[in-house]
Image 1 (cartoon, one colour):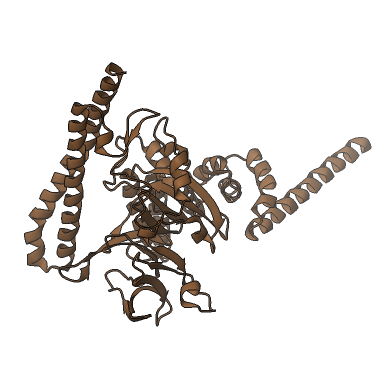
Image 2 (spheres, helix red, strand yellow; image 1 turned 180 degrees about the vertical axis):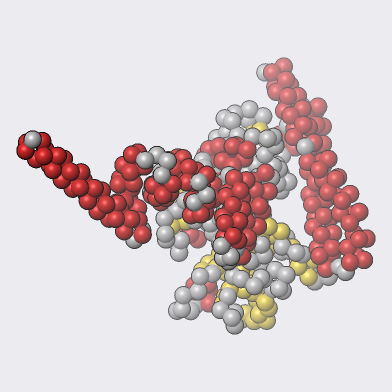
Length: 479
């Protein structure tokens, strides 16, 4: 009997000791978690959730640790368990995870659930309602993602990205604000100068310490006549990194306002020479924009190449410069494959955007070449890929009369699409500045232009396919 009592006391001692260790381990893990040391807390919560798979708190803590350490697959699994048990924090983190992986429809559901939970507790929901608006906008952008070929990328220090840009003289030049204006203070901006060297565009802090876009002209031998771009271009937040096409009227720039979905977003506006006003800025789509900072979009028409910067996926202090082939028609990825659209919008791999069999070696080399003004280094009216080894750039390259006729149709349709884009932008700009009566008068014209554009967008692709088949048949017959 005495031996039995001793054994019972021993067992209870072990149980009490283990419970003490368990409590101590849990408390330590929660402290690490609250201090943001997720990697250190993760093993403890992994063990705990393995022992109690239905415990909502363990699923939340372990899911957050997975999310914070980049284990998104497990993070989604465990946060989903916690969210289904209506754990408030779980919906928020799961929404963030879905946002980061471009599943904006699911992110919206999680944020709506989070808003509902906050509303019940009479807590502030306004920040999340604003976020939900950005999520909805991002979902529409994914659905209309552009079919841009991104042919190269380079990770750089975020304060030294300009060295990745080598512009032809006809495209103008870019320098840092400090270099151009010879100032010592830190001004995070660039200066664009046109080919003639008589006009510059730049951003600098204004009176309320936000960056605004300005322009100056050269008067005799000095710069002056500084003008701030109007407030339909400048916003109530930072506007920066301007670049002007060789037409002198098309301006690309970055803005944290004007409906940005996150950080700096890329926009384009045009100067209306008739009214001496700027058209309402157009928000560029994906893959150019993201929830990170996207800026300094440049299009060198002489080279037929473009660049833009993004700090998505980059550690602090770094950014990535993407080199791409501009598409004046801004063709979209067609079809219902949302996984494909999400991958292209997020730029998960630049190779995914390459045409089958295409070799971009020469274009990448061209991106780093200095091309003096007026030098006919490259003439590219278009890029018409026939086979892996044959690419045409001018109409005279096309051998088959039938193919040439078909491709002329492509050129004509693309011009119609471009002209209709410009007309639609002008109509929308007029609509935004009109009163109610004027808006009603403009609606039919805008609808007609949108329908016309929708009807035209798919036609160049079909005619290009006919032209390619005709050229391939002609080349086979005339070997």
